[in-house]
Length: 284
Image (cartoon, rainbow, N blue to C red; front, side, top):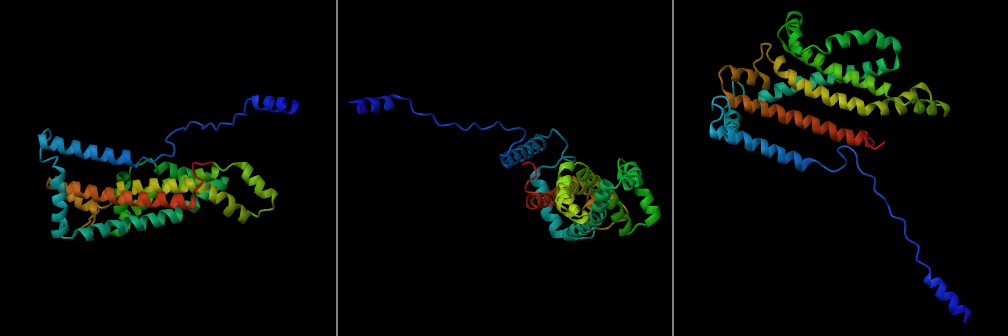
């Protein structure tokens, strides 16, 4: 009888409630993809463009319809423009931007890392970089022509100068944002200077460096039109400026669209590189 009573007492006790997991609220953009929003925004902008041009709110001379721009793409692809085919214009611009980016990255990253590690290097190099960095490239374009002539050297040098500063300053910022605890922990484990640099300093600065490279490419594409003003006969920037002189607005839109596609491709490639090299970015 006592056993039955004890069993009933145990059964009467409330069951233990399981712990509930509480999900912390997100902050900022979060982890959900935004590609659908971006596509919808792009479609809305194209729709507004078509509506404005169709209703004649802006003169057709200044704002052609999107379908007319697409038609002009086929015309330029088939017949070329200004004595060169479309592929020749694209290859000329890609050659300049890729060569300039290679030089700017090869020089800017080591210089930026050195400025972040050495007080003397920062003191010597910071002043000239900060002096010319805010200047628009068009301001020292005449100097490039005077010093280097009107060949490819002056164009590529102008692009290198425009792309060098953001890469260098980003590399410096990446080193200076390195937590001192990581350095002291590596030293306590007996890491040499070389091991400290390649295992701690460089990986910690890499997210900032890749961000600087992405910004530099944006500035480089923006400077490309100015660089191709220097006695060019090939290039997307040259095609845009030549078309603007004859009020060929549809060709101008074609050139702008090509630059936008190329710039987007380079940016997407760098973002993919970020996911491979620094998968921890934004998660720590």
